[in-house]
Image 1 (cartoon, one colour):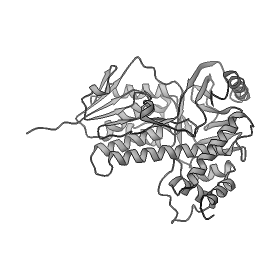
Image 2 (image 1 turned 45 degrees about the vertical axis):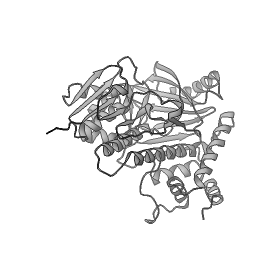
Image 3 (image 1 turned 180 degrees about the vertical axis):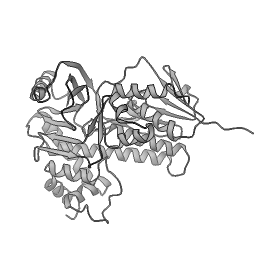
Image 4 (image 1 turned 30 degrees about the horizontal axis):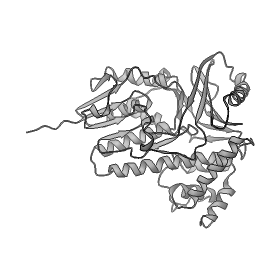
Length: 404
């Protein structure tokens, strides 16, 4: 009798690879799991923010305690403060009471997870640069960070930013429990509070705005917070160019992609870790042969989710900001194009947006069986009213055939 053995390989040790190892070591009945990574590839050093799903996942699957979270400099994330956008100009996208996301240092998080598993006999760790085609496993989760080739990916064409400049400053302790998203002259600035430092990042379009224009405006934003947060010495600085994309075929019966090998969308709503977890979970269902999902189903779900996130991000640029600059003219123009395209259909995004505007969120007959673009109905309501876009959305919806 031939005994069938099942083996899985996770390639890459970044945040997506760490989440994959946690998922499969705890929830996948396998004979062998190997974690392959290239020690010569540096890990990302930017602070990250999450939705509430990640702390819940880490607690359930790693038994994460507050002491554990402190090892990767994490802080509670109770919401997102948005300043300088059109609408009310300053509002808080609050998470539900008792449901927090988290901010954390990516490098410290990755070290924490790696240290947990390097002594775990159920996971074999291999340090090497590997060709995916040479791996003999039954299942492969590719989290190597390598962007897919142009012919293997779609461009998220409605995202108006493609560069970031990040600075980190020491501080005595966290002064806020929320991410700040500050609309600025040439884009927007994130502020992420960690235990030992505060990360500032200017997100902009390098094809529209020069480095000197961005840098000058960035300094003005940071200077507004230096005294408020009692910032100390600068300890990090990094320039990052990026593109926004998603893979055309992310799932096959054997190989699935995650992290930057799968997608990248700008960090305005900190959706990347939630999507990475969703990809891991769908792959688990696919590979367990439960007949719930096929690879085609997974690819359709993946494409829908990422295009919904793109549309959700576009709501912010559709609102615009208090700045009348070349960047904002470009950003609001393509965002409106995206919103009009969505509202001309009856997809899930248009359903939840229009019904949020109409106040139909208490009607059990309304079509809200899931989060859309990682937002629930409460998040849409907060942001639609905070950004002051309700009336404009309903006008466009009516033009698109909605009875409003």
